[in-house]
Length: 71
Image (tube, rainbow, N blue to C red; front, side, top):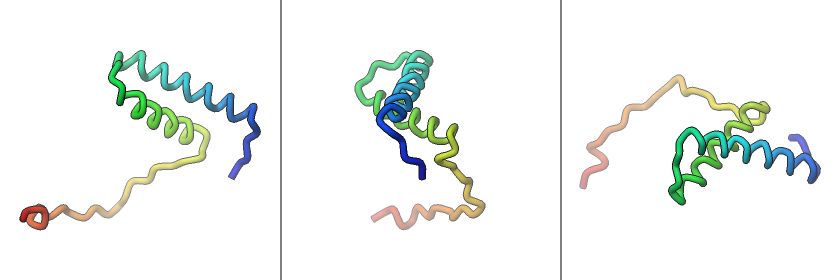
């Protein structure tokens, strides 16, 4: 895993905040909970773009049995 100094971390934060502003401008959302969601999406996007996170599709999907959800 890479180690980042303070200057690099600030640059990364600025890049993520730019993503936040970009997403907010497209969505025009002003709800208080929206920032948290947009922040998480922006961080995930940054991590993916820099090869620090990947998302894999599962090849096997188990069906959900709703009988177990009822009382």
